[in-house]
Image 1 (cartoon, rainbow, N blue to C red):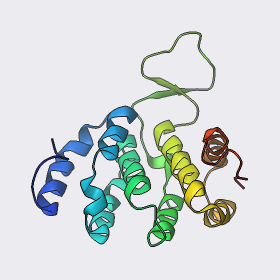
Image 2 (cartoon, helix red, strand yellow; image 1 turned 135 degrees about the horizontal axis):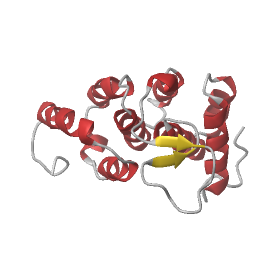
Image 3 (tube, rainbow, N blue to C red; image 1 turned 180 degrees about the horizontal axis):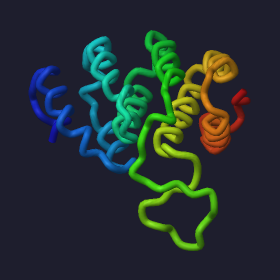
Image 4 (cartoon, helix red, strand yellow; image 1 turned 90 degrees about the horizontal axis):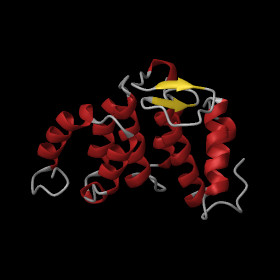
Length: 174
């Protein structure tokens, strides 16, 4: 409903401030962002400023919202460096997840757990953003990844996502 409401940008941001803290899984977060077509038409500076509070959050899906919205609506020549600088400043150790992480594979999925380092959904969102950036800006992305302060596990997730993507499977990721 927020995406379809006819309202000002300020009113939409006000509604989102109430909605984003309720996000508790990747599917709802990502599908909201994918359908927020109003973001494509929004003032990019205002959108970027709005997203900063979510990048700074210590909640996993608040941060993922900022990452996925940036990937979807701000991954262009003008904003690329801003997006890269922002993800490079993420403090993954301060982001809390509601999911328990495990390093061992289970025969059956365990509700409330994810396999890998936490916050898994922020790490995977960051890797997805980088793989998408690689498709659009390969040289800039490779340079950023090589010089970034991102954790090694995120770089590995990014390389994996790049290899799995039909858009980048034949592009060197590093």
